Length: 320
Image (tube, rainbow, N blue to C red; front, top):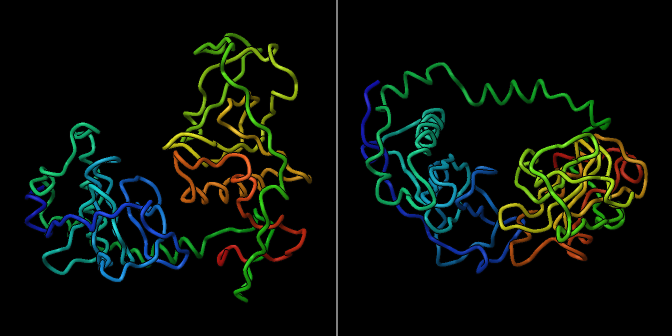
């Protein structure tokens, strides 16, 4: 496949370089795109600044630091944080082709690291020429794919009906739905990096992925019963710059560390409901930071949909 420099296909410009902590978070505001690999790069919505023009929709955002080379097609106007470039096609280009180039840019992640960013070398990055990209995506349609996915979407597992009335689901503080239990501090605890026998269970820490949340293995005989939690328990990471607020449902028996809070439902709750609430809690991540942790009253006051079937028989999840 014939290649060329990225700068031959796109105009490459530095973003507006704003700091999220200096902006006002606003539910109906402008997307704020940062150097993250999640949620299409969007970390919050912020109130529009009169003297700062948002970057146009239809451009590609590229993180040149942090989660380096994470690239996304932005469908709405947006502000950007530091070390983030945006790419504007020099010629007319379909969304399918833009997504192809997002993939090509992202495939170059291995060339960079936190100490070797892409600020200088991005324009010279080798990517397939435009004609090759158009040939590759020929016959593929995002609109058709989305229609197919929505048409095949099965919501029956939620045991709910989706309303078209536009009425929003009621919200209540987390403390009305769950009791909170703090984890156990690591001081004085014997930990192993492997599972010695069946008495040794995971010692859970904050993590941005559940698969990496096992800090070590500990002997459950060294803990009281109220410090050990069973499979199917909902828990939240309450610390860590890259890990706070992520919420999961445990897949095995475990002991949480002091930076993990366990949530015990005040009323019986199915596994599906716990998974739903773990998603809702994680979506509140933009409200917190390393300096503003989701602990204590902050966590307890996070607003969540009222328990499905209790007050709202048909919660409108699409409008929540």
